[in-house]
Image (cartoon, rainbow, N blue to C red):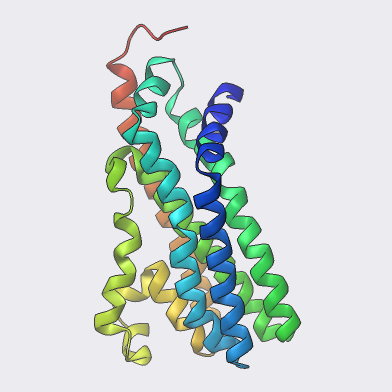
Length: 225
């Protein structure tokens, strides 16, 4: 597992300038949203969605480089098990997203520390982590096309103008749809929907990634030691 983490860290170091620029851009977008709009609900719903979209370039860039350089093949041939590959990527990539969320939390709480803002912040964190895990767990299937899950935001351009209609549509189960709905009053039903859909989707993504990798591992009966 240590070697798995080291290999992912090496990828991060090779792309540190680009990844840092992405991180700063995401922070600037959400900070600007809170500075320009005193309403935290609007800030999480609109600039927050854009900031989440930008921050997801971090796992996308790391994983896309991993596949373009055929590192995934070496991980399989070296004998890493599916859960080690997925867990290793998660351990390396997730901290950068958590750092972004910590910065976003500081900015939002300085602007407004009311219970409603804290509740929206926690839900926003769940959505960002869910979106990140989606990209990591589906990467064995989508490979360099791992950017595909992020394009769920594009669907909201069609139906996102009517928030009430969005709340009753299937798009309300997507990360981007739920982030847009943070502009509405937070109800118990919405909280349950966010948490339940996050758990179900992450488990589903993990199983897809696990069994996709398992097939590749089974094709390498003699791993390189």
